[in-house]
Length: 251
Ligand SMILES: O=c1ccn([C@@H]2O[C@H](COP(=O)(O)O)[C@@H](O)[C@H]2O)c(=O)[nH]1
Image: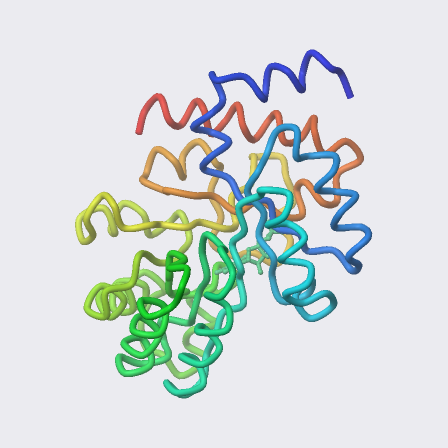
């Protein structure tokens, strides 16, 4: 990895592009996650702790990222009855994580309870609702008994998230143009499943390149396996950051 490349990516020219990114630490051990953070943290300070790492290393690991002054998106996708979700969020919001999420399909009362729990906590992380998982396509929704397209379901769940006062949603880039008409500019639009054109989509169904996602209104992107499975993650990160920067020029 070249020192010049690191310096370029850490320069002010990339400040906004870096701020728009969370790196998903989907790895199978705390040691691997820390090793990865160590490699990328000269450039990126936003990390997503998802279900795999959270179930291995828990809040102790989240605390270790916070102690390094890193921004944490705790992607635990809470989906339960209102009382249980509220209790979990009160526990999470004892820590200064930047963002946490619930499933927007948990229903209006669950979303309202989530909002109230976060508002009454010492730290008030951004609370976002997962709409339709980016791995799902039309056929999946039909198989789940939902006679709607992913875009229509994203619209409906976003309306519920707005009504409950959530700070944003998680959606695919394919719904961003529609959301722009519906939500205020400050409403977070968090987008996983972006891929550069020659990258493997893995199990993601609704994908788009990062520059286009930013152009269509993504406020944050989540980058996972493109980096965690790369031989040279800094080189891949450079390609993604350049694409994000390009997208920002046409936002
Ligand atoms: O709809 C969703 C919600 C969350 N995710 C999470 O984002 C990353 C994406 O990882 P990639 O390896 O870049 O595909 C992963 O942690 C998911 O749990 C999502 O993909 N889609």
